Amino acid sequence: MGPRTAAVALLLLCFAVLPGMAQSTGFIQGRATDPSGAPIYGAVVSVAGANRNRFTTVTDEKGEFRLSPLPPGNYNVKISASAFSDWTKSEVPASVTTDAEPLVAVLEVAPQVTAVTVGLPPEEVAAEQIRHELQQRTLVVIPNFFVSYENQAAPLSPKHKFHLSMRLLIDPSTIAAAGLTAGVQQAKNSYWEWGQGAQGYAKRFAATYGTAAHNLVITSVVAASVFHQDPRYFYKGRGTVPGRAWYAVASAFRTKGDNGRWQPPYAGVVGTMVSAEISATYYPGHRTQYSLLGRSLLFHFAGLAAVNVAQEFLLKKLTSHKAELQSASTTTLREGTPVRLIAAQNGATVDFVLAEALIVNGKVLARVGDIATGQVDQVNQAGVMLKNVVLRAGSVEVPLRSGQTVQPRELPGSGKLEVTLFVAKDVEFPNVP
Image (tube, rainbow, N blue to C red):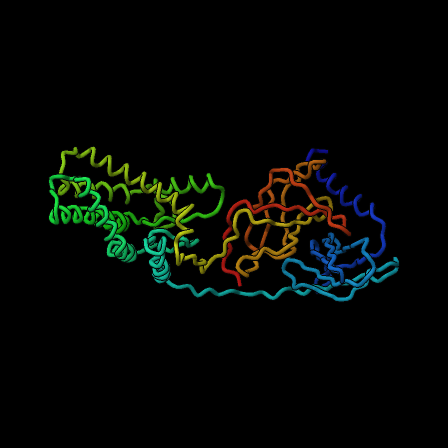
């Protein structure tokens, strides 16, 4: 007998021993079938008493179930199975005699619902997203247009990139920032060649605003359109703090292409270099070409990394009118979502049955009774070691975080074991009704 076979045998032994340890006072038993009379394996049976006590089990390969011991009284019975409509019955008494008739639950096949999604063209979706992004302001005043909180943002056309950039350039906050910078430079007598007074201030303001303008247009419009790259930061907002921090810093050195894939930041590098060359024609001083390019690239990447970290951890909290739109075509089951599973015996193997539906934004992504499969590597006093557990929710496979020992919980009245695992990564579900 191999180690895996022995582990399964130990887990099955738990199923055999635990129910026999209890003293029966009452029970509910029965059989779940489909309309043809075929047994339904892995149906979740839940009974609730008047005192709100709830007992749960699953049907075996013969479709049979038994809950015992139960306190005397009447119970509401609900049986759920994947691909079937729920079966319910009220006021079912807990039997105290062995000759009581078992319940016979015939579950009807759930009606197939075909969801037809009438989607907007990508350009219209992008236009709607930009409309929301142009309302985003930090501390009510400062524009925060170049960040997307959308889970699956539509790619921007050159027209969209131009519109987003122009709105930032003509925003009063941008003009005020250029004026404030020019005032600080004048107070410090930076670029003394331009002198003081109104004329000196005008030159500093024109240089500051002009640099921001051509840098933004060349980088976020021209180069971004030529290289088909998106100039926005895509907010992550989930995962560990170190993971999010690394994502924010890494996003300064990579860019999401219009095809949705990460790419080297060609637009940012080319735009910064061209903008630096243009600035060299009107800023006074004796900087060499290489020092100016080096300073420009250093400030570009360091500043972008700092802003991205601020976006990830601070600015969202301070930003109003955040455009957190849901994707029209998919629904995301997030990493870390808890998944309750009941171990069920199917001959010599053990499956895991979903005990509670997974619902996101009112959409049922996985139904009670959906089956998860994986490997039982060991069973000991510390718990159960599970590996490679995957929940099958319709046509979608949901990987569950396993490979570590989990502590099962015995379900009263059935002797079945329940474990809680967690979704291992974000999983996209096609549009569901």
